Image (tube, rainbow, N blue to C red; front, side, top):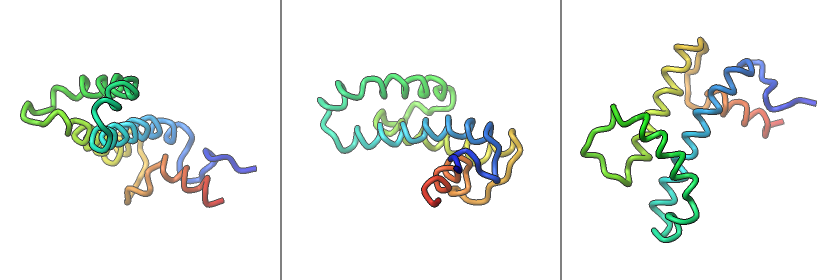
Length: 116
């Protein structure tokens, strides 16, 4: 039986560290889509937990966030920084190579899971 984390490309700790940043990235995408596509009454009540988690990320990124950025585009700005961290900084710090965004450790583990 082959499990999703048994990939020969990356060890488990690299996949788990990247999975944290991947979850944050996908959370930002979900919140941006919700703010863009759903009415304000629905996004304010149902997605309160998602908004609280995103607020933590916005607080962490506040020193590098310009004041002129629109409130609705903060998710995209945070998503940009999370992508930069995942694609450039994590491989440099942890010590693995990626050449395409589809070769990130979390995505590779998910692709291996569904490809059999």
